Image 1 (tube, rainbow, N blue to C red):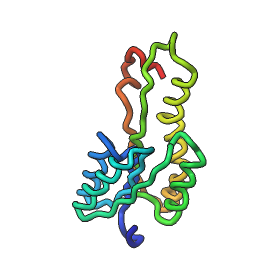
Image 2 (cartoon, rainbow, N blue to C red):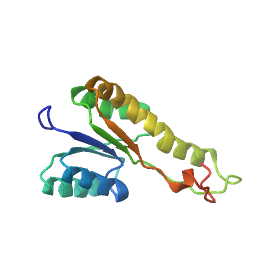
Image 3 (cartoon, helix red, strand yellow):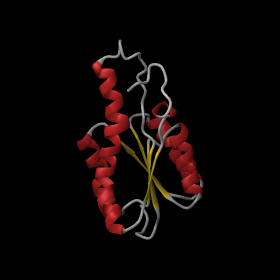
Amino acid sequence: MEPSNSKIALVVGGSRGIGRAVAIRLAQSGFNIWLTYRGNHAAAQSAKSEIEKRGKLCETIAFDVSDYKETETALAKRADEHAPEVVIYNAGIARDNLLVWMTKEEWDSVIATNLDGFYHVMHAVLFPMLRAKRGRIVVVSSTSGQIGQAGQVN
């Protein structure tokens, strides 16, 4: 990306919606962006263009946060070379169904992305952040985690 004095924000789930808006706002605030996404390349490229219009660098990184090895491969080396100053964990999925009819696969996919994914990402970047003695972590989550919603027990 840029020399070691540049600030990097890692925005996990940054290609659309809230993640995209956060990535663009962080770029306006002076951060270069590591923008991660799972598979919507067009949305990621669109977000990258918006960030670069603001004069900042944006590296798009495609991987599945629910896969530990994929996440480590995507992030660990980058973080070792230049720890991000900010991590925004915005990855999340919903597989709405009432618990009585929820399949094991529906349960597991949500937990793997929304909970395990956070561990996978932070495991890859936390030690470099600690070594740099700086960093902020922000987790974006659904209000369903605070107030129950029908079909979203997972």
